[in-house]
Image (cartoon, rainbow, N blue to C red; front, side):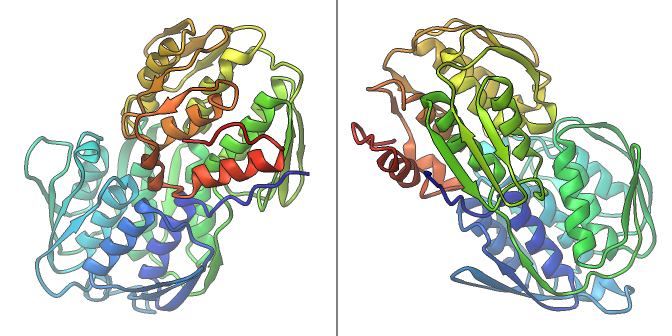
Length: 427
């Protein structure tokens, strides 16, 4: 049985780092993801004055939070003076860390790559302002660069639109235990719900009291407890290898992911099952075996939208059209992923139709072409899977996978070797 060991979840790594930095005492994060995004998050914490040691697969975080749950402003975000945080391409850093900065007593300027400057930030900034934060845009409202003048955050009740990104809500929930009173967030729209459930589960793992009732989230002002946490493999990254098995008729197992996973993107395996793949989802591993030919389907992917490009990239090999719906938020990721998938499939000679929040891919044998990755790791990794069936397909920017999985191309090549296919190299 072919096996791929997928690196740690980016989402869980970022959340664990935030919580560990906010806890009283020293925490250890095991098997974190080491990538450009997580390195940016670590660098941001260090600029804010936290001690983080990133040796091998054990990252040590020296937290700053008083045990009493009060007086957080004096202990959180301990940077002594004005500082700059450069978030690179990491939206988690740009959306989570300003909350820590607001809790501190310093002035912090956040900036990032041109790509991340284009991505929205407004809802979380407006929410932090409602909790008493002093934040100012340097240029276009709702986007980086952003200056945060620390002074503390208070609890309270607010309304939030998280229809473009669940990270807006996650940032507030993560900060909740650090506030001076109860935080209640009433959400008017929410995308990628499993990522919020993941956040709540991790917060509870570190001692927070956070609950959800329908569209209302409540966090009590009780401090996080330092501890040890092991990051499970990244389910979004696993989707590429599961899709590789499905589209080639081979088998692959990803250990460490299964029914016990905190990540919603594990459900991508069920999408492949609907397309005819054999799927075995155990407590701690998932195995996919591809059929002779995939079946077409219609699927709403609002809750697992990071895997939309994965499905779009293998859709031409189905026996009927593949219609993916309710994925508008993918238009405001690292690039407009709906448009990027459509353009690249057309380059390969595949008929495609798109609308505001959907894409329909028709069956057609793709031809060789140069894929425009648009600097987006998920476009690069998804179309690498298309390339398993299309000799001569190439990527204009194979290195952009460093954002979440620097070793992706080597891992895909290793899988092909396990299958006995050495005809061409990935990337």
